[in-house]
Image 1: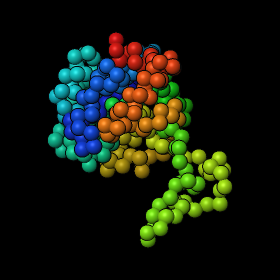
Image 2: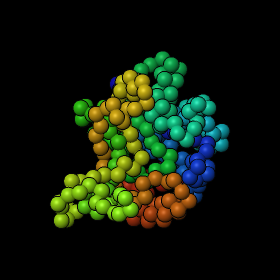
Image 3: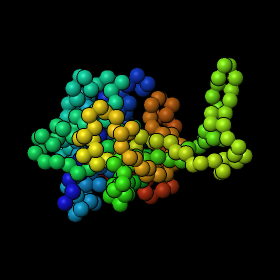
Image 4: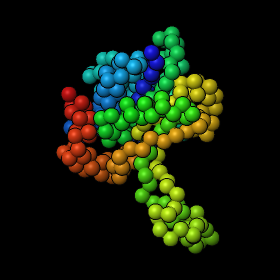
Length: 255
């Protein structure tokens, strides 16, 4: 049976949106929308893999919020050198994998990272992303995306020498003709633990063969500002009322 490590990572500080990981989102702590779906994955995949869930953070407040409700989630206190806003997230994944493997004296086969500030996953998104990775072994990592609302070959521009110009010049006359492009929505990452274990310079995205898992477009990528948070709550309220696959995640967060 495969061993899966789910990582949930959150810093204490944030320049763009102070204490965003501690916010309450539609009546429940924001982090619960991620911890709940991680535990749901572990429950529903128990016959196929052994799952360990770990929170890596330098925030005592975030640790308390999680440990008050989720007794089985392992807590790692992030070291100071991994707490800066310029530290790549893959360095924290690497640190988490190293520490948990040493503590449990086992090797994981896969690592799944779930971002706290991307709460709008459908109930089976993590399971489906994991199974997609299993079915496509040519990829060392897959990450979640949604279709981009703008296309650099058609309706995106840049400014050069004071004048705007098409970002990627082309002869396409409609957006549909242009190659499909996607936004990374910072929600789900599934990777071979061996690829992460062997990544010595924290550049797993550049050094790995990657694939994509397309998610429902919720219009806001993740929460980086007060405005993002307000918009996300409005969208989430609609989705929780209208779509059962989103509503189930809210129910798990509230339970």
